[in-house]
Amino acid sequence: MKGNHISITENDHYDEAAGKWIPRAFVEANMDGSKISGTWQDDKTKKYLTLELEEL
Image (tube, rainbow, N blue to C red; front, side):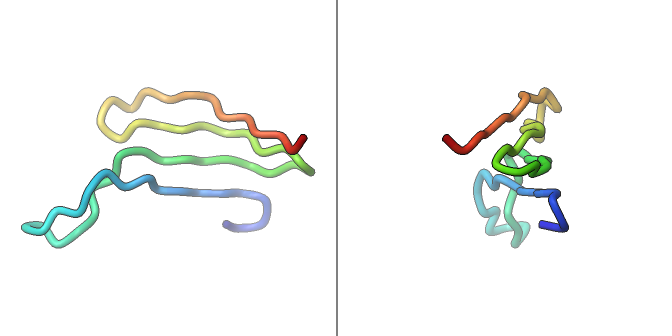
């Protein structure tokens, strides 16, 4: 997190042979007051979904 920007990597599994985590998706979002909005993007297909969260 930097300022109001959030970057998250969603990992799929740990590859023992490669010695690293294999990513599943990435979240890029911004906080604005009690609302978070951004995108979730699949690592393989590069398709994305809009993400909106708001505190109730």
